[in-house]
Image (cartoon, rainbow, N blue to C red; front, top):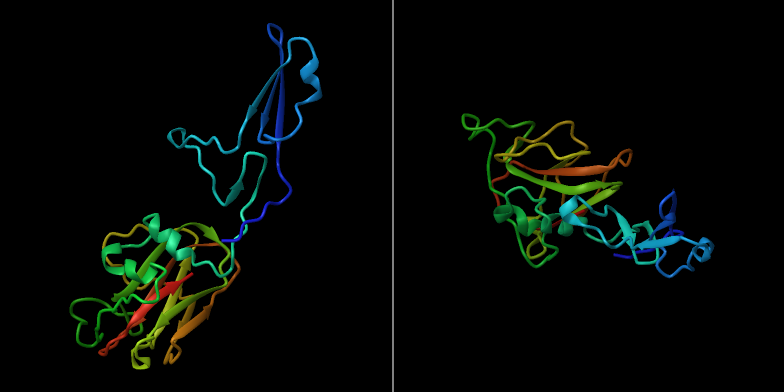
Amino acid sequence: MRRGLLPGVVLVFLFASGATGLVIYRLGGAGAQPPPELGGEGVQFINVPWADLEPEKAGRAYQLDISDAAIGALRLDPEQNLAVAASQQGGVHKPQIYGVAFDGDRGTSWWPNQYLCAQFSSIFHCDADYGFPGTVNLDLKGGYPLDRIRIVSGLTNPLRVARNVRVYVAAVAPPLVYDPDPFRPVAVEVRDNREQVLEIALPSNEKVGFIQVAMGEHNEDWEVHEIEV
């Protein structure tokens, strides 16, 4: 990830007290000069570093770049795979099965379950050739302005590429217990794919916090190495 600081933010609060005089609190700005009021009689100066977050008191930083001196917006590298960090934070539904699709390693493989909707219609419902055996669900643990996802498949054999894929996105993750049916509305669908590295453009109107990728019905091996966000 490439990180960059926007102009540093430093907050200064001044409180007057009849008993102790002036108390100045500075949040951040550890390397800055002390306030000019410090030389006055009865003046206290307390510098609180940004980095001293206390998780046990619900302190946390979200998409911020924090140093002792300043705080700024976190800049993300467009080529960084956000799915890896989300997976490490528990964002993959059923990680023991699907986690390999989000591990950041194109050398590993997830083999989507083979199924044909006509054969299993008495067991589960299909939505336009897509059923729950082919769904993978990822909670990104935050909202991001995504413009694409990448599905890497069939690297060891071009005949094993994921052929039919559709993508659902949402601002927040829904509650998940079992493998859910494919969600609607569909953001993007790709049919008869032949690309080993399939880049799928996403609508970029809103921030995305949840992604479901559904693999269509099939009765041959599809080898998915990575789903990159």
